[in-house]
Length: 279
Picture 1 (cartoon, helix red, strand yellow):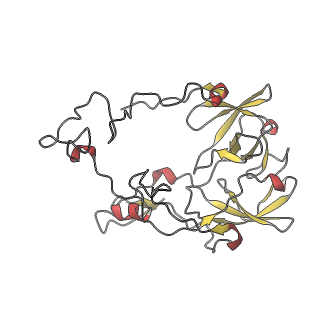
Picture 2 (spheres, rainbow, N blue to C red):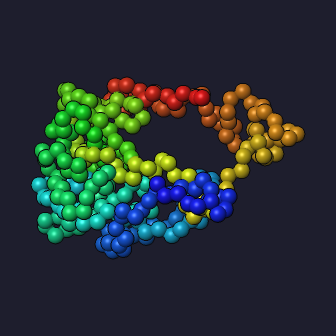
């Protein structure tokens, strides 16, 4: 982590990830595109997600989550780069057929490292293979849920899943939340833990830095008038005044299960995630 000298009050506790180990190169033109920001508006121009807007202009890096078109092809890691659109780092891979693509970078990946995508590959960090060929106890990331769709889970900074068992054409994975889930053994996954493990230790420090991220100010419900929020009104600092926590429109936000009881993927969950204990 990078810490700053406290020459202002906002700098006193501010921290940032140390990016000195990354390659300072321009992104590949062939793998970048401009995405227009919607600022939380829908196709009618109405705000559907509050507190969004502004922020630094970004170019989207097209990351290859599938890698299935490179099965049997070896590649070499050319660079490890910062990606403003995700918490993890990405790496530029030059394949033996001359193609270059961006891929999610695992922890401790080195420049010049050779990686391969195959149904069965050496058990080395960065390699991608079918779950059925990964031994119990190994940590993986960028896991496919639907065959051929590419990695859909375990893609954020520092996350990893652990292989627990293989049975009946399924592989049991322990997810970062503590949930144990069955995934088809023929699906692909990459070995290792996702890079930028210190991402959760970042202290933003000041409001201006939040604005650069594209996040606008949020007004507390207790600071509003009664007409604007269920928590509004009262003299000074008052209690909530409602039996259950609610949002601006009176919808219950806590103490109620929101997952659909008949969701198709329920049958794949072996063990529910462990709830966070308060205090």
